[in-house]
Length: 84
Image 1 (spheres, rainbow, N blue to C red):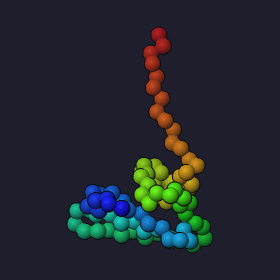
Image 2 (cartoon, one colour; image 1 turned 120 degrees about the horizontal axis):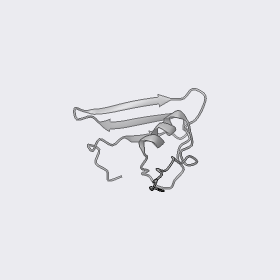
Image 3 (cartoon, rainbow, N blue to C red; image 1 turned 90 degrees about the horizontal axis):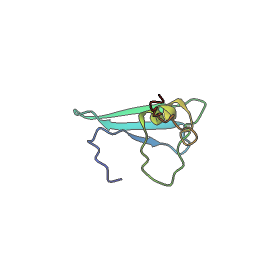
C-alpha cells in the first residue's frame, strides 16, 4: 500500500464475508487493533477496485453503522451571498 503506518491514519480491513472488520492504527505508544463482528448483518464494504480508499470521518461512521457509503453523499456547504 506504500502508506506510512505511523501517520495516525486508520487502516481498515474486512473479511471476505463482510461480517468482520479490523482497524489498525498507531497511537504514538504502540499499535492498536480494534475488531468488530456483526452477528446477523454484513458491512456495506466498498467494491472499488482500488486497494486503498480514503474516507471522511462521516463516511467511516456510516461504514461502522452499516450504511452503504457508495450510495450516501454528505451535504455540501452552502455559500450565502448578501442579497441586499
